[in-house]
Image (cartoon, rainbow, N blue to C red; front, top):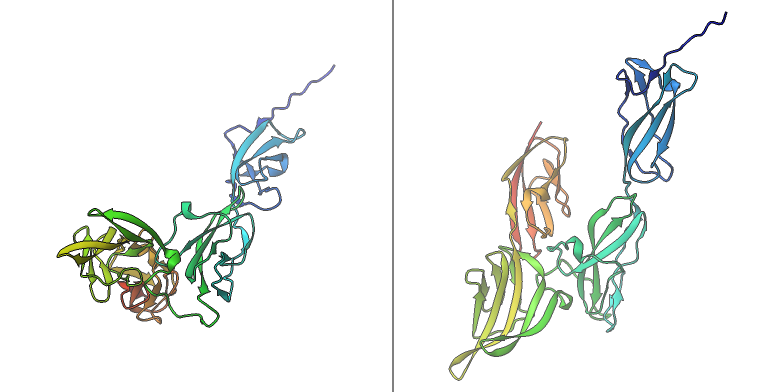
Length: 364
């Protein structure tokens, strides 16, 4: 007589069968195959399974198809998913080209950076106060013709497997002639590369208009004497948007928005418009007057405590670096010891700079 036996195999889709959470992994140059652990209740049955990974060569959602060994006590398949995260690009940052002098021709401001995993994008401003938005960046190393100081911004647009790298900046200078030497801090008057010159009709008269391309902070004092001559009278519009020192031609910005200053002279007992300046002001407001931190604990992003839109402080300063040290460029605060410190963000580098202050209390 023949005796027949039937062996029941538990399907991998049974509720007793579980798979430990598969940890997300960063993209590498090789296919990503994370460790997969399969259990029947508390029993590890990983060795009773075979694994086939799918879509695991690029960043994004990947899967693993888990199948039971044919000779084991299990049957069927089960699919689990995990994420392959974008990796950071490998790059060498662009560097300013030294000893540039005006020659009447466009000149590259920085050397070409190298990057694996994306492309460099660039933007140029004449004030570190203004941080370009993403749409203002473009490919190609920037070139400028006019003498002046330029802030070259660069970012990396990551490819499908690499993250974007946030905008960073460096400074490049085209000197007037070979007798010039590199100067000190940035003054409040933009170079020629920082303005747009046009004409418009004011009260029936065509006048030259100079528009400053960079934005400034409300409360900041801007020296416009390089582009605005002395006149009999100045009118600031809209009313209350700013105030001008007639003698020094320094504008104090009072309200956010466009600020227009028109110079008038008398001709035949009548005020006639002669020239016009246009500035853009943006608010920089403090969110919290006082922040708290733990000594040698987590760093604080000082910039996140100021609502300033696209503006970027020129400098950061701490009243007590031994208590709370601040990176003068980024505003990152490191709490070091118990005590109180005042953190100051400067918009502008001259006497007319706007100063925004807040306190940091460091606990033990």
